[in-house]
Image (cartoon, rainbow, N blue to C red; front, side, top):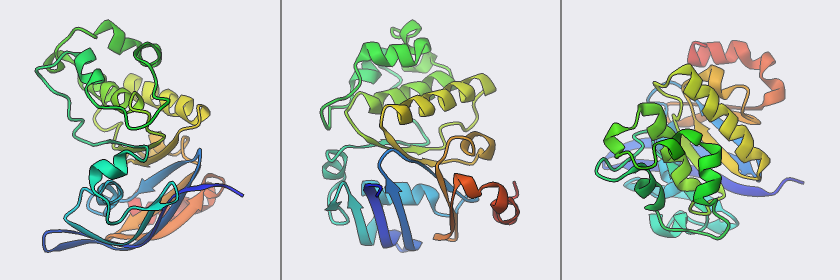
Length: 234
């Protein structure tokens, strides 16, 4: 029986008066890579932000590591061992690469050391003294991922980490996700790049209009391609 690390049940979310999520149900088991698919505006990023407590209002149930978190503040959710890598990356331009890497506080024990992260991302070691403004888009994305690995988070929420990057960087990020899964991390990805996401995920959820409309395993992927073409145009 797989251990369930994250479950959403009947989750609704709002930004101000805008009702974005409408009864989202999903589950993520320990050690899985789960990908949320859908067109822009389907509610995938809002789902990640709802898990983190970064929306105006949320209702329903969000259980994380066995605890109900729907009424918790964002910093309390993070300290359960959750790491969020936003689409906008959030690199501080005035700080060096290494200063950016060291900035977030530890949320749990067992975070990766700076040396381990430089082994995982050799580009960052070469650029460790470079200011954030001098890093390429790919280097910024590597830094954004590396930064949350140092905190001790064991469940990672990754939002569009391959977007707009050169193929060689996308390949590096794919290799990184495989390595993290081997090391026991659990990952939820929002990804527009289906070719990037498809070989990495154990399970998929498809979202449309703020709802989960399909859920299936990697083993079912070939049989579901017709449905994915209908929803995503892939």
